Length: 115
Length: 424
Image (cartoon, rainbow over all chains, first blue to last red; front, side):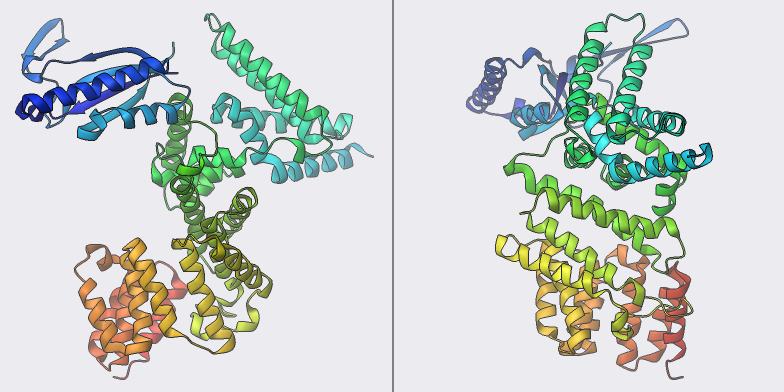
């Protein structure tokens, strides 16, 4: 099955870190991706720019509404994702627990809808 | 055999198979597809077919195998219907072949149901998975393993059948769509995961116990079903001390059922129960389970609660009240659970060692917990202790609150009697 790991993190805390800590933080993500690759579980991933760069779009009654900012303002924001292949939820959950985001934030695990 | 007798025989055979093997059949079929709802539907149709076929053609020598084959065909039909026009033929083929091979192996090698590989425990672990909402785990296990319907489960858990039905449907959907596995967890994660299974079984048992008068058949059955599930877990995991502890605890409680109510249905507290009405076979079985658990060297909530039951039973049977060790057990339980309910029972035990004022002081320290203001045993305990210190007005008030919170009329009557016995 395919699962999406959605990393919710406090984006401000990264900005406040020392360059040394930032480097270490990124290295942890590198190692995590490396492990995903090695296990053949890696499908895709991406890191998102901070929510200050977000724009939301909604079309209702034929009118397009474009708003500055993220969908919701919360302390922890969607900061990135990993699309993985795993045999079952338990396997996906153990990848989520290894993901650095689950240590400094929260990882939501969602199965991909099979058409 | 006349057709009427044939029909009767078919029905009673089907009933017997349902009681004996329903959970086993669900577990076996669902472990492959993870689609519990479809498996339940397929089995219901298979049982319906059996009631039509067996009176005409005679009961099969291996009814479980017959039902397995029929349910497997229905499952393949369902999948085919759902997937018409879709390019999912490959997956369908896979399901068909897998079920075919498994069923063939099971039918060929068996003359009775014990040959169907038993995956009920794996199914219980799926139902009590941390990804399933905690409150629906016990209802889910009762429905999926025992085939109880949503309306009966709803009345036991005091919710509406529609709401319960919806929660069960959602939980089954989650198992299928999120890919919750059917397996017994690895050694290192077993204790935590087993805890959720045991908690669900105990929740079913406790709901079954709420109506100890036995007027509500649905609830009484629930306690029996929980005992059955507890036995199943200890058979499949014979060296898990907490599983042994839970079964012991349930047996101690169940053993006293006949003594909990008097001839006119009135509530009888432990201290006044007729010991000769207790089921000694169950009590001895419980003692045996605790003895088996203790050398396994891993103490937990259920073993301690069972040990407390054992101490209370010994107190009534042999008259040797060892209140100090009872308090120690409550200390351990409180440290484990931090539950205010445990703290109340501990205070009552302390009253026996240090007197009512000491116990009242403990209750006073708990009074800040909002959960307790609506908890009948807190007020009943308070009333009892106040009565012992001759603070009759305060005791009368505490009884009032306790009576107002109680939903069981027999317990309400008992509390009313205690209240009116207070000297004016």
